[in-house]
Image (cartoon, rainbow over all chains, first blue to last red):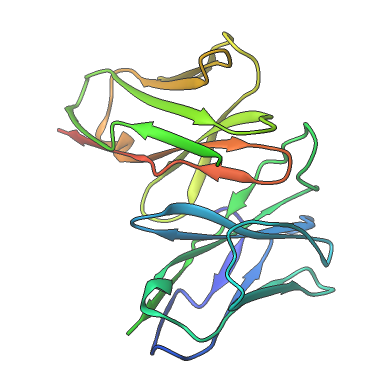
Length: 117
Length: 109
């Protein structure tokens, strides 16, 4: 158990809908990262927040957005869902800020499996 | 475009065999190379490699990085069924981690 929690574990919804995935980082971690894992694309970095502020963006679609709240939990919002959005969405957390030469080990949550029908 | 390529995509061996997993990369602003093990759910961290030619070891697992040829290998000796998993190679650059698609390893008893 990494100490990172994600809810819900599974989510089934229809195309065009909007969903919210939630992540609580490990106690003391200030950085939260979101990843999407699909069979054909592998694990892809979406976005990072550090202490409430967006710090890095990856391959995140405009239909997706995220935020980190004052209590450091984070939410990933996915809207206008398409079949291709079906994937496993991971949240990870680390103590510090990714950047420069210093890698802060990221601890992954168990993921939310999203199925879009 | 940054990319991390792993080979083979999948591998089936018998318990006790030794396996070598490969990872090549082309990434700007390279900082370090990471190996993760992913069983049923979340990836778990194995190694971070920053310098060429220095082997990192953890039990039966070892890894080495060649920054000149832009690749890394992960060796697992005396494999056990518990080693069955997807092994992910990733490169940490200055603002994000780029993952390969993984090698799916299955160990037969």
